[in-house]
Image (tube, rainbow, N blue to C red; front, top):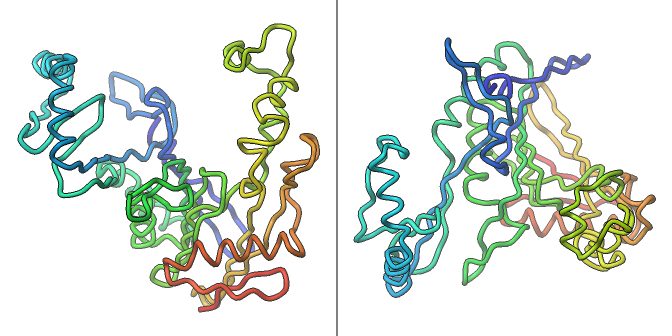
Length: 329
């Protein structure tokens, strides 16, 4: 149930006891764990970190959305669901400034933008477990699996490299609750590193072991998506999906370059982060790629320069010495 999903795993070491907790912001609704009642068991699933999305649009688009919402019948359907109680005690929106369209929330604004915020109920429940874990461990760390992207640039386009607002807010919040570090993953590539109140936030450490091309069985609909039939096997499917290694994950070296971060402390205070680049074998055949080895030479330098650029917006300075990066406090 949800409390089991939120509870920590403990790692005992000679340097102290570590509580490891995690959540995912990328999930299907049916996979979300739920709480139980005395007369009803809790629903098994993942510790979901929900977030709300508001789309700010200019007036002409706002009016067009209103028109489409009514003309296509979605407004009436939503009102019917509210009348029958399927939306709980949720209050109707102010239609002069807001419209719900295709399960998305649009607000009248001066320019186009997108804002995401963490679900307060999930933060409260997660906070209870962080607080309890701190009483049972010397160190608490938090991780979030997040595929969502943030906005960047003049036109607010989404980019994998930028974490969404809600993830930045949540990462800061976990540190404020006393966690020693925050580690993100999910977009399959490296994102920047921030030192927040003297503690590290890794917005994504990329892939460590990436072997999704070595699966042994696939469902029929996967084959049909690429026009393949019963004569094809997983090897055929995987080669077709990647265009013979030229597209998707297989075609982009960013998905095959990662890093291991070693955090060094003195008397409980972070003093240094060592960044060891990892090479997962981009360009190698399927059975040879996806296993982490220490990167060296030009690959190591490219990984470290990538992290330098990605971390610059957070004011984080990474020194490159040989094939290792260092963040010194």
